[in-house]
Image (cartoon, rainbow, N blue to C red; front, side, top):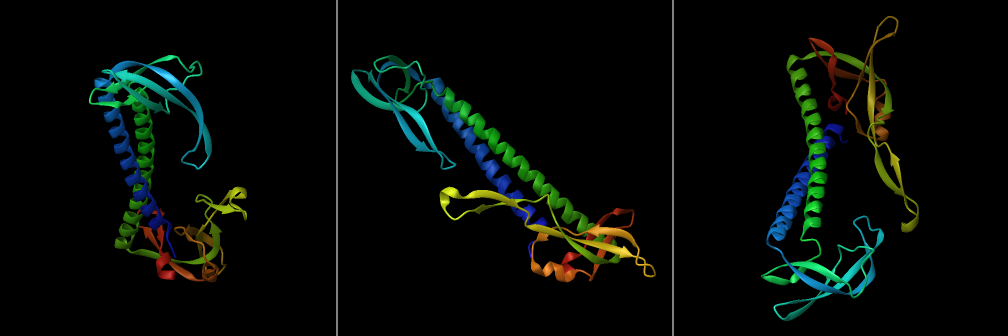
Length: 251
């Protein structure tokens, strides 16, 4: 049965690693485009054709973009190329267009001296930074829980509480596909984790004097069978608000 703390460690690590790699990729794009912009040479070209092209983006959605076919001459040699970026609605077939190229790679051209690539690199780096920060925050949350558990077990101040309920953890959501056919599938959110609510009762009156919540664990039919059982709770001797329900000893 998966503990949410383990899941946080895994997810945090994945987010941090992926985010870091994306940031590095973004910086590489910026560096490459900056190098291109500093060395690029302008040349006058002609728009040979403008054609709408359909393509699929990262979300597998169909999009349309205008592809520009250009002709240009460098050192007496004619080149033909296509541009998927840099289109403007004012462009027409036969219009002149300023292109940029590297002297040692005249077959590669750009309509904006690589400036759009620099902006794209910045956007990629920002996106990666968000992932990286989320990963670090998630890892830090898991680390604090692990440290608290270790600290409380060292003090070994314990009480026993009765499991009185299994409650859904509404702070954790996952999406699942519903529908029979691919194009009719919808994303529906559900809550796959629950926690045990435990209580300490007065032996004579059965009055609840304190309640505790366990860490969240993956939903299982077995959880309901723990209602009524006793579970050990580790308490901070200086602050009873800090505690750890020893769920692993019950499971």
